[in-house]
Amino acid sequence: MIPTSYYLILAGIIFTIGALGVLVRRNALIIFMCIEMMMNAVNLTFVALSRQWGSLDGQVFVFLIMAVAAAEVAIGLAIVMGIIRHRDTTNVDRIHLLRW
Amino acid sequence: MEWVLFALFSLAALGGGVGVVLSRNAVHSALFLLLNFASMAMLYLLLGAQFLAMAQILVYAGAIVVLFIFVVMLIGNERVDDVVARERTMLRIVALILALLFLGGGTYALVMGRQASPAGAPEYGSIQAVGHLLYTRFLLPFELASVLLLAAMIGAIVLAGRTRPPLGRPKE
Image: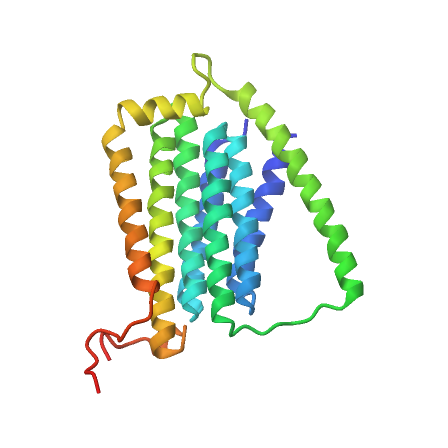
């Protein structure tokens, strides 16, 4: 059986890659994808620790996180579509007005 | 064998993650994200969470990535780089090998996860066990999640659905 720490290290690395992507990339869609990746890394820690303690609570939590992630993506992509409709850009540096 | 699978899927997950950040084309990023999500599902299988692995593939790989690709293609400001035919056949072979690896590894991980489950009924990580917990101890969060999804659905329709004069701009 693979030790839980390996899963935690892997999740940490993936989370870091996602955070790096959020900081480095300027396309709103790519930033979104990186946020999803970070969520997934956290989910992996939940599942790994859930096995570690022999309890299913962590898995239920991951299930709820998935529901929230789906809602978040639906709303977020709708907002991105709206921004593109008005400002014709996905560059987050050029989206700096609360109203227009 | 378990170590080989862990190494394979974690490398695929890491490669997918790096690909999302580094690739210039947003469609490629979305596909790398798919690779990341799929290998995550396989890691869930290795951890004995069968139900979550399936949910991961359905929700993340099935719905979220498709949404991303939809939006990227609706925007359509991405460079379309044409792949020459020779490379394409190469890609086909690589894709076939990768798909077989994922299929075989997933099946093996499923069997391993079953064996790895701690003693006690019902099976750890199965739909039955998780579902029982969802409908007893976590009933309220579960129902709240459905309300949240409904709100998100309505919100998305309102935000992206029809074109109308934007709020706050004076009519001319």
